[in-house]
Length: 448
Ligand code: GLC
Image (cartoon, rainbow, N blue to C red; front, side, top):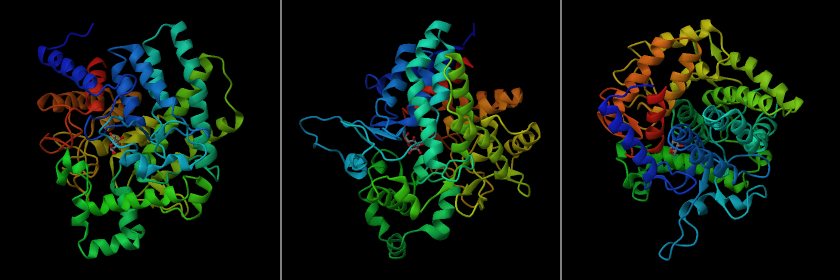
């Protein structure tokens, strides 16, 4: 039994209260006001924390995601859970933005986004499984196996058209690190749409700021810039115009990036899918197994000898996008790189000129021209990426580093509250408070 200090016990109670506050019955919103829907990877992290409180409820969190899976296997990044009431219009703003019903694969009776998010499902399913008896685990795995298999199969059939082993993303939102410099540098250098450039030149983006809903709930300098937000909405609109039909989208894709974070999470998820299948004696299709094996080899091609770092890659040109970001640590989480490479990555983690800040790990290194300690994925420390890094460090036997990062993450939350992200230099909480995955992963780290 782990003995907890009074402070930690009080904080753990507060974490449960945040999850309760954001609980909607069988799913949890990331935050009641800023994010009033269900997000894919948020729900996975939430389930990982919730398993310590109520295992049935953790299972429901995952099952509610599968209920909105598309017929082709895609699991959408957002399930739009509009709370209809007398004083609310029939379709909400997000439903009108996405219009998922334009695609014949979208589910009936529920609106969703038309893209996906990092595939954390297998991890959440397995972590829940760890808490169950062998018989219960078998029942649990059988319940989710079909959906999980369909999702992984979809990822490789649709998003790896050249069968290289890496899946490509068509929108930065799919990477979960929305305005991370790796994506934004592509946008800034050659992908900014004409009309957004005009808006930028004439400073009209200030007007757009008046309509931004996120800034009602979080401070302006802590969100994306208006130009970034406009550009990302423009990409989304282009996808919608093609009804999220990949074959039409890929012809003139604005973004087609083999994202490092996404692929590392997928590689780990593949390994877990294999274990789940073995546990319930289910075969995996030969084509999928081939893709999974390819992925483990292909990731090595994302290594840049000069920078001693892994990067995301452009799908068409195979050019590495050499912007250092938090993604650099995700190969640890994938578990398939060599110990030698892992050691190089840990050196970067310990470098006081880049990632070793007082409240690590910054989403963008302090040495980067992009670094801003308050701005979303361009500097702040996020608890979910810390959690992934801690898992990765432990897997490679870097136990003291894993423990150090765990303790600093817990302290950062204890010092303030369950914020969405934190200033990596002074630990100030940023974005919205009462953020579900911060609360859920606090509980999980406490038990680790
Ligand atoms: C933001 C984050 C994304 C998260 C979502 C809901 O868009 O960038 O990763 O899933 O908010 O919390």
